Length: 175
Image 1 (cartoon, rainbow, N blue to C red):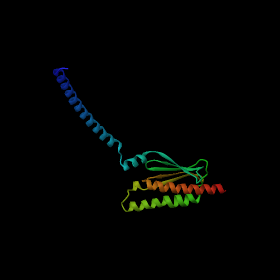
Image 2: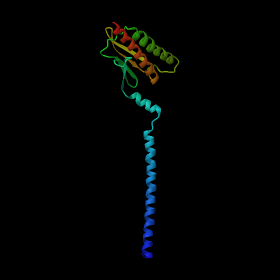
Image 3: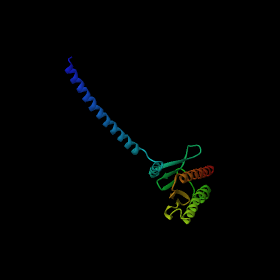
Image 4: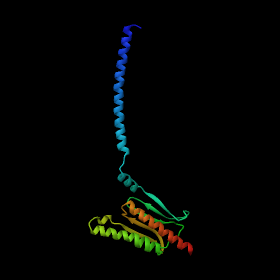
């Protein structure tokens, strides 16, 4: 090969390397932008995750100690819990674990706590917990709880309901 052809090839290669280097730099910058946007779009704070979780409707089954019987279900929404006894069980509203413990101690205790917070100006009247018990005769149909507000209270209600329905189930099974 003569020097002229080699010089042309070298000039062509230099141009291609420069052009492709520029393209490579542009592609790297675009990738950085995409990565940054992806990170921002996919990252959610713990508060956002908990808020999204709270907005979802979900059902939490309350199982007996042996895990074989569904005692009740908690239908959880953003600001509302419905405790629905299992259709197979006859849960009496007058059962002490239900009236004395779940309603009389746990839920009434939360109402009392919220009343104090409203009085102290730390909670608005619209934010205080409220509950309603729906019965048919003495048969408990559901307990509706509004404004439970946070995961800690949901856990307390779930645990108290599980214990109460387990005890009511045991009392019914002994009859």
